[in-house]
Length: 607
Image 1 (cartoon, one colour):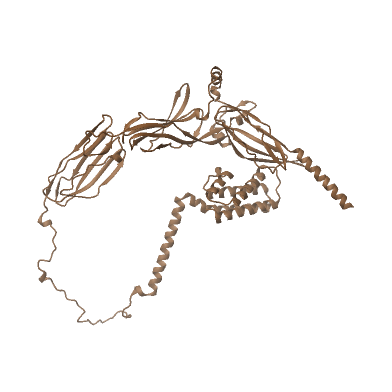
Image 2 (tube, rainbow, N blue to C red):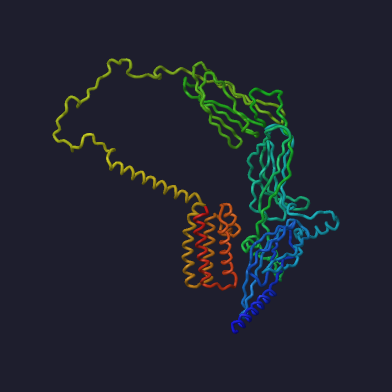
């Protein structure tokens, strides 16, 4: 009877506690600011009071807003013997266009019951310096569209003309306009062009310019293109990737207003996590170019395809040689056209022997050096060299002539001709007597006797020496390759260093665990995990996050179990280091074993 009564009382108490905790659960959505300036970022928090085991809440896509999950923030509180817990899911909100937006109510399932968050209104405005003028403009012209990110950062493709000849050089200018934004990690643009040869980009230029009362920072990229087919050719669009440095200005607010001190700058904003990089891809409009064929009228036979404006020079040396002596022919083409299509003139093959030329091209100059050898003394000159090209400015063919180059070729002297000495009197060749064949001299003190027919290379010692030498040389070579790779291959050196550093960190963490130092243990455990993952996946320490490691793991075909265990360890370290949670020694031992298994699995299976 007592057991039955005790069981009933226990069940009642359990039901009462469950209902009590269920009634304590509450959810709430908050924004750190209801108004966001275009180009800055806000912080959205989904706060859940009275529960911990909750999955992150998915936010629906909202046109005009880029919302990304940052991570959870947990909290345990003990007050007068009572425990309360909460979790907050944080999201960054980056506006892409000015206007009014609403984050709708969200359904959250907790322990089989549904909870609903409150809806949030967000107002995205243009930059504050022009907020008044923008408001006046919107009142006067209701049809004006809201400004977006693409209105403050855009790409423009410019060409001086849209009609060119085949292979004619055409300067191209790609301009990046930025207003009221901070861009970083700007890459060189990629220019899509089919039927066009695109040259290398020059060093980018940076300057500022006011357009329509708005100040723009401009980055200018210049290159040259060469159309390789006739007809209408589409140039572009030009594409460029960069990152927006979005700042959360609301965190700099206090009851005294906005800080105007030396601490309110980009360095401290980035250091204390008040800025965030957001990828931005820009694309310009394309341009249609009409490519004309080269005219046939007046086209010289020496024309090989060069289009532009060129200068041609040629020289030889030496000018006095003998038959069979080398002469160096030098030619140089300099110009603004496509040097790949500019071919050197060819000498006739008569009476000369030619060696392969050496051709170089740099700084809009193409040079040739070739060795030619006269084969007869009847040659008096190196023939005329003519270089032809089409000048698109005057729309006609032009030719540059060099030579002829006079040379003096003489026969070699008889004394210099090739002779075989000693063949004239073959019968009187001296006969040498070989001593020791018929008469063997008597030795008064003979040397050491040895077996007849003994050879050193047939002895066992010789083979042992050769084998030892080969092994030693191979070992030294492998050691050299290893040390050279350590010095030149950073990724290899870090991967090799990763398990060695991890073992040291594990030993230190084990000592702290045995001493019962919880905070120091989890700090050391997280530092060991962070350094190991940074070395293993070639990441910086600041970039070691769960998302980045999982992305690297997926690219290396890792196991999903590894990612799940890694997430558990990240959460344990975060709760122990930043939440008011008391971890027992058994929990510390489980965390320690989990890190050991993760490192062992990673070393065996992840490459």
